[in-house]
Image (cartoon, rainbow, N blue to C red; front, side):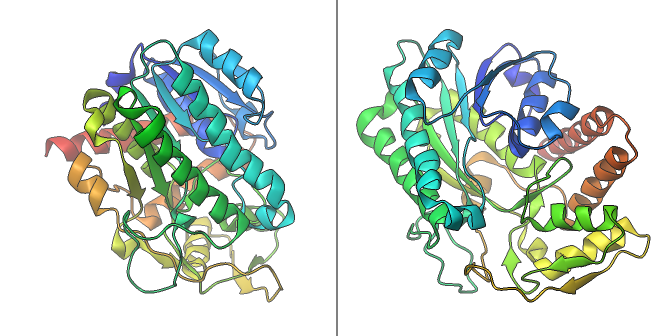
Amino acid sequence: MDLSWFEGKRVFITGHTGFKGVWLSSILQRAGAEVTGYALAPTTPFFDLVNHDQLHSIIGDIRDLDHLSSAFRQFHPEIVFHLAAQPLVLEGYRDPALTYETNVMGTVNLLECVRLADWSIRSVINVTTDKVYCNNEWEWPYREIDTLNGHDPYSNSKSCSELVTSCYRSSLVGSSVPLSTARAGNVIGGGDFADNRIIPDCIRAVASNSVISVRNPSSVRPYQHVLEPLSAYLSLAAATSEDPTLAAAYNVGPRESDFVTTGELASLFCHHWGDGASWVHMDVHNPEEARLLRLDSSLISRVLGWHPLWSISQAVMATVDWTKVWLRGEDVNPVMDRQIDDYFTLSNDSCSA
């Protein structure tokens, strides 16, 4: 992915105050894009830790079509990344109505802005999740042609978001705007402060000199560093801008060798953190979550040439490096800049090899 492609491009990001959104807006600003973000006010410290000198930030709710439409029309974006969502499985159980309103009608509202735009929009990427599939908990990785039907409210709402996008692509927008979806695995990285996520839980524990508690240590997930799917989203936006026939749904996951259990991920964290960090299994009753989930990312590899670059160990190490800088009260921007540069330099070297 040559980030210089985005220089001077007008890019609209929903959910720019969230974990992925902050990283994506940082990458695009470094690339010289004109970035506008639309999202709820940040709920974690991450957004305020990062420089936003070149970012036009609009605080708003994607459920508010009038406000979203006004912001969209004011900016006239060429490229759109839809990241705004209610992103947590357990929160979906607690408030399913809010989850569906945000993840389904939020997608409808964004795509209505796209449909009604009277200027040329070159690419739209709707970021969903690996959990959109009807998970039979089998050993085989899921492919894009497998059945969509997430079981819990969060997963199911994202399945619905996929169907909404497919409908707009085939019936409402057609070939005039390439609409794609990206089904990414579980992401980790510096700046994730969310509740009920394994790496943030690990960080909170070690920061308080406590033993880490792991709810589901045997669950298998496609964990990857946040820069991996972001590079895929960027590659997909650039590719479909140049060739709209490539617009489709794509899985974005780690290499097969990097599918690990949550317990293995916690052990990697403890290894890289040092200082005697350790974890124990916390036996608690929570709503049911899938125990096994794998993704087949061969389609995006074959069509776009994208493939993951960092091993799961490298991903954890990068997360630990960022977090230790933050815990020391130092500026996290240099470490973010270095990680972005290291990743995309490796990406360019890999493509030219």
